[in-house]
Amino acid sequence: MSQIKLVVFDMDGTLLEPRSSWAQIHDHFGTDNTEMLRLYINHKITDEEFVKADIKLWNSNSKKPVNEEYINSIMDNIKPLKGAEILIKELHNENIKTVILSGGIQYLADRWMNKWNMDYALANELIDDDEGNLTAIINSSGHNKGPMMDKIIKKYNYKKNQVAAVGDTIVDIPMFERAGLSVAVNTNDERVISNANYHLKGDLSELKKLIISW
Image 1 (spheres, rainbow, N blue to C red):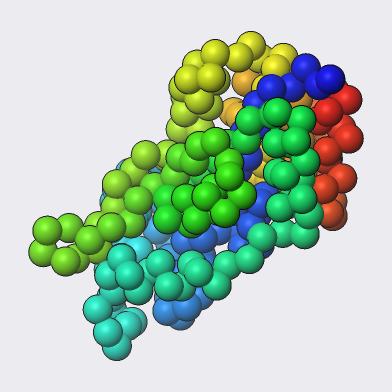
Image 2: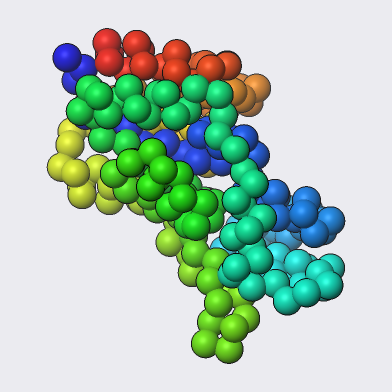
């Protein structure tokens, strides 16, 4: 029996194909937020300012109103990475809880959480305001994964050695630091790999044995 009782997954690039669900939307509209991304990474703008700029770009390049329904329809085309569904199912068979903690979009996190019967998902909401305009509610900042991980661990009342974290980018390192087992997946970023106990490239279902035997 595994000592791991909870696995916290990043979503974009970890369970699902695109490295970023936000970038997927930019690809759809043919927009480029490189400069705003640079400012965000360097803590020059807030999450709210970053997303507000994204929404403005999308609207400027769309022939129809960009609302919640439209954005969700774009994300419906996103597919899981190979082995993700099998891994989640096999962890559940071992009575291990699974959670998504993502700087991505809540609709997408909820969609796959429900499809795979996962226990919880925390990401950021893109919803219509009272006037029907797209707006954002930031629940899980890309700069704030550590404290959010703390809240999730507290929610389930597990110790560090009972928790695993799985991610693919530097923003997932604070998750790794709070887990007894940390796994970097499908990344070439040495900063991420060096901060993880294990690095997997390929089929996610191969993680089952590692997690259960940890």
